[in-house]
Length: 441
Image 1 (cartoon, helix red, strand yellow):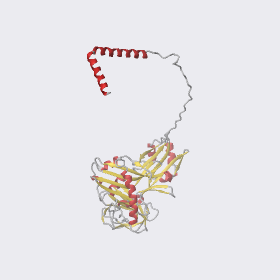
Image 2 (cartoon, rainbow, N blue to C red):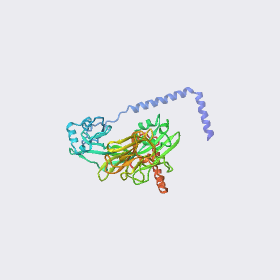
Image 3 (cartoon, rainbow, N blue to C red):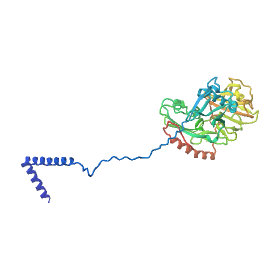
Image 4 (spheres, rainbow, N blue to C red):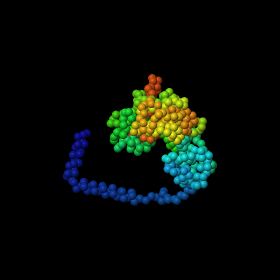
C-alpha cells in the first residue's frame, strides 16, 4: 500500500514538471469558479414573504424610583480662645442670637459654665437641613476632673443629660513606619499626643523613641472612647511593639487589682519599666481611677486626669521619687497643691492637701521625703489625695508610669499569658497599616 502511494506521488510530481502551464491554468479556473459562486450567494435578497419589517410600540408601566436622603449630619468643633465667653464661641458656629439666648438660659449651662478654659473644645451637630441638634463639651472644674455637658434638641426644646448606651470604647490599632523621625511619623498617623507621650514613657528604661531611624516600626493598640459617634478621648495603651534595627521591644497592659488600673509588662510578664520607688501614700486605696468613666447612678461622664487616694485627713504625703519643687500654694480647684519635676519631661501634682511640709519652691526633694498632708481643700467632697502625672504637660495614667510595678504571682502570670496571645494576634494583623482600624472586642 505504501509503495502504491509513493508511486502515485512521484507520478504527480513528474506531471507538474512536464506540464507546469497546464496546472497554472487549472488553478486559475478553480479560483474563477469560486469567485462566481461567492458573488452569486451574496447578491441574493431575502424573500419579502419571509421577512417583513414592523414597527412595534409597547406601553410600559411608569417606573417610580424612591429616593431617601442619607444621614448628612456631622459634628463641628470650636476651640475656646483667651477672653472668650460661651456667647462668643457659639456665635462663631453661626448660631443665631435668639438661639444662643435660649441655650445660655438653660439651668445646666448656668451652673456648669462659670469660666471657660483656653483650648476647651465645644462641639455641635447639625442635621441634613443644617439645623442645630446637639451641643456638647467638657466642663473643667479646675481640680483634675472634667464633666461632659450634653444638650440635645427634641421637639424644639433643649434637654440636658447623657445616656450610657451612647458611649462606646473601641480598641484602635495602628502601625507606623518611621521615615524621618518617630515623633513626626506618630503625629502624621493621627495618634493622639497623650498616647505618644505615654508610649515614650512606657519604653523609657529600654529605648529612647526619639532615636528611631528610617525603617524602624511601631505598632500599638489603644482605647478610644466615643459618645454618639464623636471621639471624646483616649484611654490606655493596651499593647505596643517597637522594632529598632530589627530588635523588638514589647509592652502589654495588665490589670492586677479591682481599681481598673494596670501596669506594663514584657512578653515574659516582667515589668517593662522600673517606675517610681514608692507611692505618695502607703497602703491607700485608689478610690477614683484615671481616664474617662461613666457614673451609672449620677448618669454623668467624666474625664479624670489623675487618680484619687481615699485616705484619712492628715496622712503624710511623700515624694515617690527624687524631684524639684516647681510650685507650692493654692491652685484653683486643687486647693493646696504641690508640683514636683522629676525629669525634663515628667512632673507630678498633689492636690487637696491640708498643709505643706517645711519646703519651698526650687528645693530638691528626695524620694520618701514628706512634702505635705492629706486634706480636703479646693473643690473636694471629702479628704483624699489627688495624684497627677504629666509628661510634657499631658496627663497620663500614674499607675502605668509613676508607681512601683507589681510583680505578677503564678496565677496572675498564667492569666497574663492568655491575654498576651490575644494582643499579639491583634498586633500581627496590622503589620504595615498606617490608618486607624477600630473594632469591637
